[in-house]
Amino acid sequence: MPEGAQGRIVRVVAGFYDVDLEGRTVRCRARGVLKKRGIHPVVGDAVRVRLSGPSEGVVEDVLSRTNVLVRPLVANVDLAVLVFSIREPDLNRHLLDRLLVSVELQNIPALLCWSKADLLQDRSDFEREVSVYGRLGYPTLFASSLTGEGIDALRTWLRGKVSVFAGQSGVGKSSLINALRPGLNRAVGDVSRRLGRGRHTTRQVELLRLEENAYVVDTPGFGVLAFDKDLEPERLPKGFPELVEVGRDCRYRGCLHEEEEGCAVPAALAEGRIDPLRYDHYREWLKELREAREERYR
Ligand SMILES: Nc1nc2c(ncn2[C@@H]2O[C@H](COP(=O)(O)OP(=O)(O)OP(=O)(O)O)[C@@H](O)[C@H]2O)c(=O)[nH]1
Ligand SMILES: [Zn+2]
Image 1 (tube, rainbow, N blue to C red):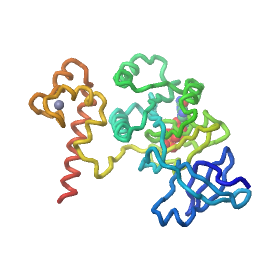
Image 2 (image 1 turned 180 degrees about the vertical axis):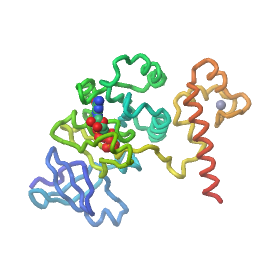
Image 3 (image 1 turned 90 degrees about the horizontal axis):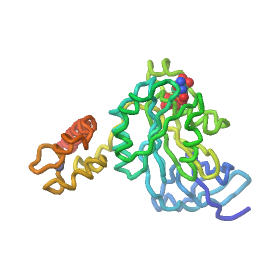
Image 4 (image 1 turned 135 degrees about the vertical axis):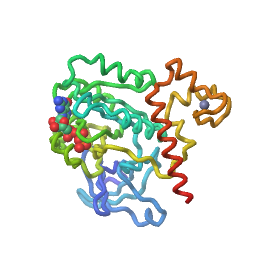
């Protein structure tokens, strides 16, 4: 048996860790000393494993993490693939901005994937609607798991990374992952049935291995995304690249871009350098975070 093989935790099941070692899964328990040191391995962790049988082993060590997403609980996330269908369901910009703020605040690069591209013949209106995201510097691609459009480009994006797929229920995340590797066969549900009941097909947090060094997490669909309960309102501007940029011209450092004297945002709004809908979302969430803080100190 080779000693100290390095692998990646793909699943946590009732105190056991399933570790991918170059395409083969080994069920492991964690060495007792890890717990004593307060180290709790999670999905996505790069680990050193000592094999104790053909498909059994012990997690000896957890390598240092680049980041940890809280929901879903995944370590070492390289890319967030935010999936939004161009129709069925229609684009939800509130949720899109919310997801973008979350990944920005966690320093995770985002790829915007417009799914079900086959449902729209003329894309010019849609492209106009989402052009703001391209201008902000987010990479975007159209994809359809029905026609295969964009699947190769998506595969190229995922190569060598741990990627988390996120987006509303029914936008086609599982279908995209199926198209990326047909052998995986994720459960695909019926959109009308599930949207009606708010039920989700996708449940357990699991890393799926697509090819060598490409792992994806299919997160359960959701309608809204809660911010971390203790996120300070002062951090919110960091979630908006355009506010970070324009904010350099505000008179006061730490300007929250409401009605402060010398704030550069009103001029940027008037000149179209800041998208009004995104700014509305910013103001709404600033208020929400302030209220949450008041709750905390009550
Ligand atoms: N027209 C079209 N329909 C699609 C496409 N991809 C998925 N669908 C349909 O959309 C519905 C939802 O697909 P899923 O892949 O289960 O969506 P999901 O985002 O994984 O949903 P959750 O697991 O609930 O988060 C299914 O009825 C699919 O057949 C596509 O590219 N084009
Ligand atoms: Zn300002």
